[in-house]
Amino acid sequence: MSNHAFRALHAGLALLAVAFGAHAQTAVPATPAEWRQAAIQDIEEGARITRDNHPGMFDPANPAFAGNLDKARQEGLALAAKVDGPGAYTAALLRFNAAIGDGHAGMNPGLGAELAPAPRWPGFVVVWRETGLFIHASEPGGPAAGSQVLGCDGKPVKKLLEDNVFAFDGRIGEPGRWWSRTRNLFVDSGNPFIQLPRRCEFALNGKTYARDIAWKPWDEQTRRWRTAAYNGQTLEAGLSEPRKGLYWIAMPSYQPDEKERETYRAINKEISGKRQRFLDADAVVIDLRQNQGGSSFWSRDLAVALWGEGRVKRRMDARSARTEVWWRASPGNVEHVTHLVEELTREKQADAVEWARRNSAGMQAALARGDKFYVEKDGDMAAVAKYPAADLPTDPPPFTRPVYVIVPGQCASACLDALDVFTQFPNTVLIGAPSSADSTYMEVRTQKLHSGLASAIIPNKVYVNRARANGQVYLPAIYVNDLDWSVATFLRVVERDLARKAVGK
Image (cartoon, rainbow, N blue to C red):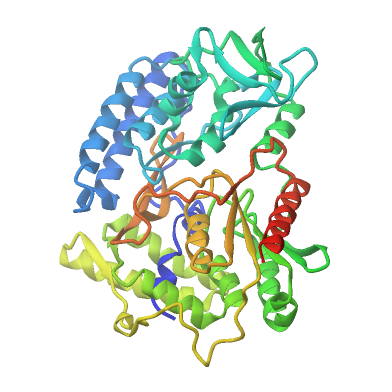
């Protein structure tokens, strides 16, 4: 197995919440002045930790990174000077993140429910679809479910989203972010730097109407509706057969717990051991709803089970033949990768343990030399097949049945790596929403700040000449604009497309 197979072990796996260099939490701010000082100190510290460890600081392909970091520091400090409590504190840090404009850089505020302002909502939840923002569910007397949100207080809805959501949640140019983040327009999280909607206009069945917006505390209904609106009805990890000949593989996380890891291994064993069933299937559905990344070993192993190890390896090696991985050799990053050896050993991922051990040694040597990076290289890339899609006699029988991959809007990191490998095969059809995007900075760790109120986000490596460009997204072949993202909805989408394919034969 080439090193490229291991390069995909990145952001989510590192979010094992190991906070290197953590410090004891100081006293929780008790006055507006203390919250203001905490915001200023944390933005300064977060910027410093980023400068000292982030590979973007020395990335020749991204000369703007250092300037963006400085801009983020200035914008964050401008709001920090106005902070008077926990809501404003969080907003200042989020502006810092948004200004950097990279999903793998910035800070994670972590105030917890005991410190953060209690969230409020207006009695309804919204979802984004191709044509706009819609009411997903609403209490009696509120805007009707299915209504489109046109705007509020004289602002069109896209301007509202720009000012109230993306100014603090960033990356407005990624279509998947619209599907996953715009639901927060109607959440009051205590941000004093925005104007909450007070009266909004809606449209339903060709008619427009207006409603005053009354904000109230979240309740259990809020949480249920927001979960349902976000990913629809999600399934536990597993393999099922909704009807004979149609197999459904639910992979809601690539950062699986032990039970999910055993489930994924059992799925691969089932596919490999009873391969003819899948060769004869009407279709396979790979359900990535709820998936927000982790380790891409899991998607690669599933691809191997379906298409065959040789086919997967040749395609992915050819795809990444020019790719290099540059590991930022800072003390904190070296400690993180060294710790991964222990984590992967506990998870019984033998190949990954060797990968982590090798890169840890390379980073330590680079650090000792004073080099900014350790460059991970493959020794077998000269042997990349000239025609990677051509079958070889050693390959198993080809798997050509339709594979439908359900993509949620928040799909990023290892979830995107899954799409990288699945889409190497022409029988793969993406359905659902546009994905989010990755930067080229991966293998993320978090580092607690002195205050204990937030953590810095630090990727350890940068992909150079990666086949998927910085900020590139996947668009679905079939958009699923139904407001209800239930299993039944996706079954209808799949069955409809299968019927279309049958007619086209």
